[in-house]
Amino acid sequence: MMCGGTSATQPATAETQAIADKVKSQLEEKENKKFPVFKAVKFRSQVVAGMNYLIKVQVDEDDFVHIRVFESLPHENKPVALTSYQTNKSRHDELTYF
Image (cartoon, rainbow, N blue to C red):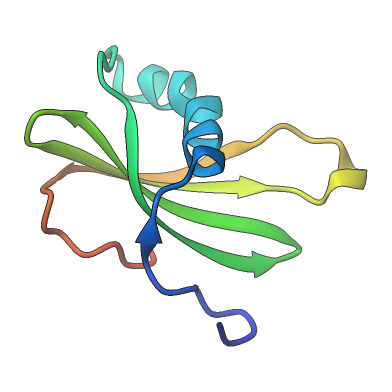
């Protein structure tokens, strides 16, 4: 990974799912709907003054959402935050920085 650049797209891990779960309620509030499925499938990461995660989340059989999540440095003691998202994505949409 180049400094400041994002990592290659990788399969989601248990850690990725945990991060996505922390911002699920933030996304549901912004979209004003509940997601019965919220499964992280792929992710990219970016080291900044903390960590950005780009995560592809399956929210229905053929419906996906791309979310950008910021995790601050541990000493800042801030919650994980949903910073941006894109809806109406498909299984085959590439996970790119937004």
